[in-house]
Every structure is written in C-alpha cells, then in structure tokens.
Amino acid sequence: MAVTLESLHALLNGSDLQIFSDGASTLLYRVAHRGQILNVEVGIAEEGGYVRLIIPCYLNLYDAGDRSAIMLKLLELNRFYKLLKFSCDPADGEICVSVELPICDGVLTQEQVSRCMFLMTNVVLQERDRLMTFQQTGIYPSSDDPNFAESVERILEGSDPEDGDEEVSDDDSMQDLVSDDAAARE
Image 1: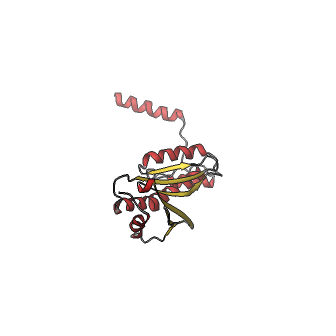
Image 2: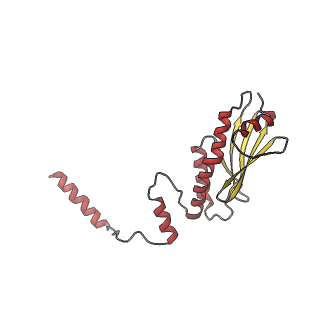
Image 3: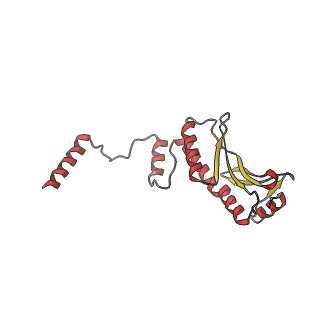
C-alpha cells in the first residue's frame, strides 16, 4: 500500500510536533538542539513506496582539522546504527543523516514512524554532541570510558597528567615482573 502525504502527516501528528508541508511530497518538522534549530525533512518517493527522513545540515566539517578520523567514525556509526545513514559531501564537508524506509507493498505503521522519530530526535542529536566533541578534541566520548571527562579536561587545559602520578621506568616494571616470577617458582 502506497504511503500518501496525508497518511504520513496523520502518523506524525500524534507526536506533538509542528509540521509543515509543501503539498507535494515533503513534510518538514523542526527540532531544537543546543540553541540551534535542525530541520527534519520527510520525503515520499517512488509513488509512495519509499519514505526518507533526513536532517540535511546535521554537522559541518568545513573547519575540521582531521576529516579522515571523523569520516572513519561516521562509517563506524553507519555499521552500529542499522537504520541510520551518515553521509558527507566532500565538497563542503556537510554531514547529513537519514533514515530510509522502503515500503513497497507494505504498510507504514505508527510504531515504525515512532521509532524513526525517536532516532531522529534523540539518538541522532546524542551522536551530534559526541561528534562535535570528537571534532573539537579528537577524542570520541564513549560511555564505556569512565575517565573520558577527565581526559578532555586535561587536553583542553593543556596540562600534564595529574600530580602525584610517578612515572614508572621500564627497569622498575621489569624488576617487579622478575621478582613476581621468581616468587611464583618457589
């Protein structure tokens, strides 16, 4: 069953968003994020058999120093998030993020639309914060790393590792290994 602009508008209306339409094949809703408005465009193609949600100006790498590291991170995110696609225009460094739903002969449900809306308004914006931090510091914030905030602070301050940490020479660490090994043999 083909998706129409009216049916898509009805599915999106349950989400308390202000939705704009061009009357032909595109809906637009806005999401505020850190004082910036991001537009989410919802397009219908292939006579209603294909729906695409896209944030066109998600992030810009124009001033980024090391684009290759960010591009690798975008590839990693593409593999991690099965439904999301991150893409970059090499000419101007504009990053777009999209969700594509091939409907074909199927039916677009409220649950599918809700998942896509969640991805576009929560997950994508969370990743935007992480990518912006990665662009500024060169370190991608990971929830697995409990020392991330401390590492970023040290980098931004330009300070050395915390005072009180003594550097261990290779000779000392080798001596510990040798003495542990000798103790284990006895």
